[in-house]
Amino acid sequence: MTARIWLNGRLVEAGMARIDPGDRGLLLGDGLFETMRAVGGRVPLLARHLARLHDAAALLDLPVPARDGAIEGACVGVLEANGLREAALRLTLTRGPGPRGLLPPAEPTPTLLLAAFPLPALPPAARARVAHLTRRNEHSPLSRLKTVAYLDNLLALKEARAKGADEALLLNTAGRLACASTANLFVIEGACVLTPPLAEGVLPGVTRALVIESAADLGLACRERPLLQADLARADGAFLTSSLAGLRPLLAIDGQTIGGGTPHPLLEKLTAAWHARADG
Amino acid sequence: MTARIWLNGRLVEAGMARIDPGDRGLLLGDGLFETMRAVGGRVPLLARHLARLHDAAALLDLPVPARDGAIEGACVGVLEANGLREAALRLTLTRGPGPRGLLPPAEPTPTLLLAAFPLPALPPAARARVAHLTRRNEHSPLSRLKTVAYLDNLLALKEARAKGADEALLLNTAGRLACASTANLFVIEGACVLTPPLAEGVLPGVTRALVIESAADLGLACRERPLLQADLARADGAFLTSSLAGLRPLLAIDGQTIGGGTPHPLLEKLTAAWHARADG
Image (cartoon, rainbow over all chains, first blue to last red; front, side, top):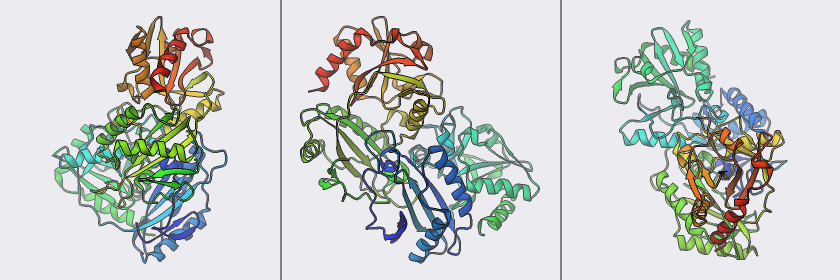
C-alpha cells in the first residue's frame, strides 16, 4: 500500500489509518470492492466501476457514503498524493462497524477506502489449470457481485500454481467454465467471440463489457454462451480480461495448447479497441 | 463491542484498536473465526474451538500467531477486563496485511483479535423459511470452514425476515437441506436423530458434534444423512444448534408446523446432555 490513502472522506497516512476492529467487512465479509486502472492521473472508466458498485450495493442494501463526484476527487487526490499517474486503484466499501451477530445495524456507518498502487507489469500469456479443489457458486447472487470474499479464488490460484500453471479456471457447480481467479474468460471460435453468461456465476467485468462492445465495433459476432472445457480445448483462441491486465492471451489449459499455442490474431484488434475505450 | 479487546497479544481499548487498512481479512475475506460461549469466566469448549480453527487454518496455510495457552489467557483476560463471566467471545484470525493482489505474502503477519460481548438472550423457538435467493456451495471446501464470508447467510436471513420468519434454512446446490443462517440443523424421526453430513456443505459445528455425542450417551440412534425438505416437513421434530443458543427448537418451515408445533420431548434430554458437556 502506498504512503497515503483516502479513508471516509480524508487523505491519511496509510500507517496511521485505522479500520475499526468491529468493521463488518473484516468480521463478516460484508463489503464490496472495485479495482480500477488510472491513466494519466485519472480513472477513465470510473463511471462504469461506480455503476457496478452502486448496483451491487443496492442488492445488499449497503449505502454508499459518498457521491460519485467525491469519489472521483478522491481518485485524483490519492494519485497526486502518491505521485502516481499510471496506477491501480482499489476502492473498498464495507458496511462499517456493527453490533455482534449477522444482522446489520439499522443505520450503518459504512467504511469507504481508496488506495493507489503502482500499476503492475502486464503478466505474460496465461497457461491455466482447471481448479478441482473448489467451484464457483452460480446459485448465489454473490457470484455476480464483487464482494470481498476471494478465498475460493485464492484456493484455485494456489492449486494452479502448485501444478506449475500461472492461472486457474474455475468451473461452476454444473461443471461449466465460469472465469479465472481474477479475470473473465473469452473463447474465439472462427470469427465468433464467446464468453459465459453472468448466470453461470460470472462477475460482470468492466473489461468483459468493453470487449463485448469492442467486438461489435469490429463487426465480430460476440455471444454469451455457456462454455464447456471441451469448447476451450478445441477453440481457435482464448483470452482473459481484467481491469489491470486488459486482454491477456490464454495459451494452454491443463498442459494442452489452445489454438496452436500463440495469441489469436483477433486479440491484437480487440486489444486496440479496448485501449481506445479504456484509456479515455 | 465491549470496552476492551485483545489484539495481537495485547489488551487494548476497542476505540483505540487499529486494524490495518491493508488487512487481507478486510480486503479479501482471507480469515477465519470462532464464536464461543464463556461460562463462569472461562470457555469450557475452547479446546474444541481451537482444534477446528487449527484444522481450517492448516487447509488455508494460514499461521495461527499465538499458542493455545496464550489464547486461553486472552479469553480470561478479556472477560475480566470487561467484567463478564457469562459471555459470547469472538476470536477472529486473518492473514494480516499484504501487498496488492490475490496471492498472500510469503511470510504473513496474521491478525488475531478477541472480543467479548454480553451473552445474548436465548432466542425463541424458530420458525424458518427456506432461502430461495441463495444456496450453500458444497463444492467448495470453504463451506466446511468458518471463514469470515457470511454474506450468503445474511442474504438468506434477510429473505426469511422479510417473509415474516425468524430464521432461514439454506439448501445446498443439489437442493438438499444444509443448515440455518448461523446454526446446524437436526431432525428427529422416531427415536432417531438426523443431521446432514459435512459433505452437504455443512460447517462442523462444535454444538453439532456435542449433540451427536450426547445422543450416543442417551442411547439414541444418531445418523448423518442427507435431508430433503420433505424429510423436515414430515419429521417428528427438528432443532438448530449453535455455540451461543445451544439447542433451539425449530417448530415451523415455510408456514407449516413440524411435529405438531411444539418442541419434541427428546429435546429436553439432549439439551441437558449438551449443558453437561458445554458448561464445563
